[in-house]
Image (cartoon, rainbow, N blue to C red; front, side, top):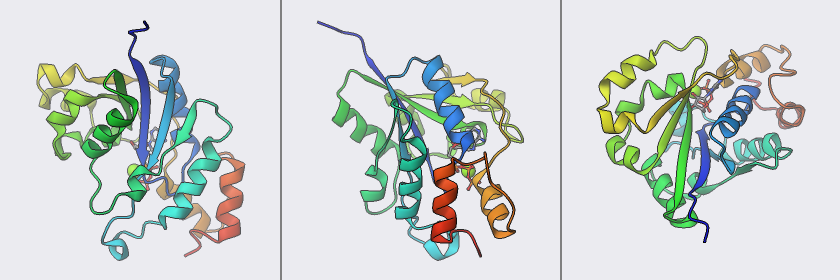
Length: 205
Ligand code: ATP
Ligand code: MG
């Protein structure tokens, strides 16, 4: 019997829109940690939508599917979009373990800016018992991963890994701003995502 644990990568995000930075990072972590696949999980719309201006979940989900479709090791889950109420990563981790079995190792892939906020996450110590985190370096991030390591104790730290990934200075915020200003976004999002943004008139105002 094969007793090896399955290793799955999880890339959560708002993906408003998904861009090359997300894809390159996910693929780099998949290779380095020998992950069976990476599941992209778009975050649901926050309850106070008006204040946050997040694009409708359906658009973000479709763009994520299109961007990842050509990679046989990438897949997209609507699980956080289907959940009502606030969405916590610990619920996502528990649901994934239920779906894929106890013998599954989950690797949550996060940018350095996100890892800097990790200590504020709901039930973070329990979450770190359930899964691993891979912090990919990201240019312009103010957070020093050393500070993050300092905050967490030795047993938590064993579940946080770092990986230097190709440094792509791309953010969804910047892409939305470029579209609003009528600037080019070629090569920073997949062509299909650019076409979708243009066709649906996203980020124009
Ligand atoms: P926004 O500007 O709207 O916050 P974003 O570009 O940061 O968008 P998110 O959907 O918020 O994208 O990010 C999802 C995850 O991807 C986070 O863990 C974030 O740190 C990481 N990430 C985002 N952009 C990059 C990048 N260029 N390189 C590596 N990781 C990234
Ligand atoms: Mg972000």
